[in-house]
Amino acid sequence: MIGVYHPGSSVIHRMPALAKLALLAATVTATALVGSLPALGIVAAATLGLFSLARIPVRVAWRQVSPILWVLAFAVPVQWIFAGWEAAATMGVRLVLAVALAAVYTLTTPVMATLDAMQVLLRPFARWIDPDRVGLALALAIRCVPLLADLVREVLEARKARGAEGSLTALAVPVIVRTLRTADHLGEALMARGVDD
Image (cartoon, rainbow, N blue to C red; front, side, top):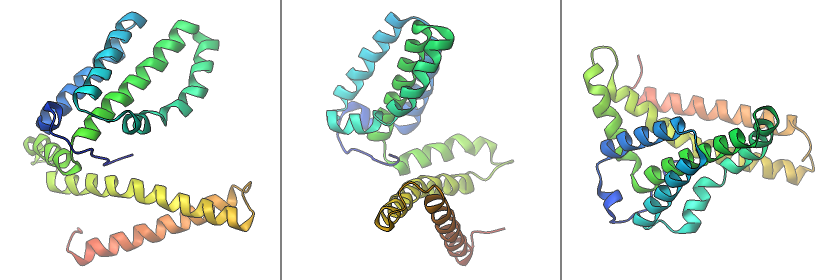
């Protein structure tokens, strides 16, 4: 889900990453402040327009937005019970819109452009933080999320092959051990390249 750049030549693809980050932050903030469903409907239409303008296929867009539906399947009914249907619908639409807007950014911006933009944003604070080190940390985080997802998938497949599908221990222990091993190897590789204190 991270770093799934969808190549293209649209206006959105050609926008500088910093400008897109600023627009993303402003739009998600505005969406969080909007309290009415009709206004959120307008934002939803505009978001669909962005997907269309960027020429993102429906299948690709759906893969980015659909994981939030699992969260909503739990959160919306709880919100409905405690705050009413309108609050639940508003919360659900806000979350879907935030994820969809972030997906537009992710699908139209290469990871390296995002990392470069973050380093540019951090340069004024170079006295207190090292922008290059933060950029490296972000790059590692972006790389490690799909790596960890693959690791969990492999453990799930192994657990299924052993017939231990219901066992949480058969999932948690191998995932933790393999994650720690991977972190050790990554740390050793970074130290071998001189990236340590």
